[in-house]
Image 1 (cartoon, rainbow, N blue to C red):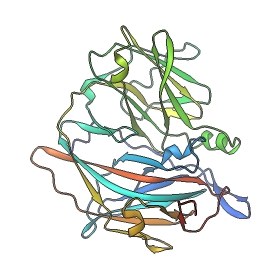
Image 2: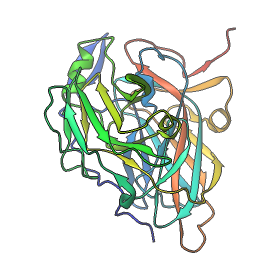
Image 3: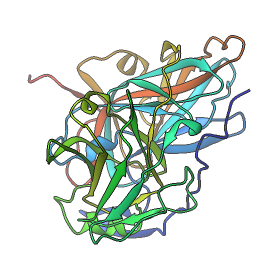
Length: 346
């Protein structure tokens, strides 16, 4: 039986929607943006989360992102397949190159997370190390990030910082951050600033100076981001001090370390059986393998992705599902291109 106790509960409210005219097009303001993943749960397609969040990086516009997303909803077969939908809900145009479904078989007593580069780690609440001290840049004590839930959170705005002090782990450790983008104030801020960032910079205090070790661009809904701190522990002799620097509006529900020992994880890859675009029809061959073509997804369009039903887990094991997406998205006002575009120079 799947252990759902350790997974954060999903609490999400749809933001208010306002339609405005932009470059002669009817665009939704304050609504969900980015391509979104929907999962068939046996009854309907359930809205999961946004994908390709690193497309928000102003230095990586129109460059491919390889995004690994751990599903919160357990997919249920729809006929002979596991079925998903990728929907472009508003404001952006997405270009997709490839999708791959991964399953990770692991012991039931742990959950799994994945780093930006696709490395899979186990975690378990009883192995969390909470910060001994957490303060904002004004020196105010922050306690709302200590519970692995989403009932309370720290509301960050551009320019804010959190400083967290941990007892130094003895060996390996991962930093866990549970957060979403703030769709209310955050979208107003982005709309007023073309060069606005949506990132969280992660710094460690190493050898008497701050060292930036990672940058995150958050998703629409709560999601657990993971950073492996193990390579940096060698240079830290006493306390482990972390700074989170916010460049936009964010809600942070939890920050902590995890020291769960490694467990045996068996990963399998599954290629797309069928991909049906709501406008273009069958795009399976384009998305099945990485090539020099993209499939374009415009606002209110969707792609249905069907994968084979995975091999069931063995006794006392469970499966965690991970979707790998490759591509990028950009604002609708910036570009209008054919549905299938070539990545070659000619």
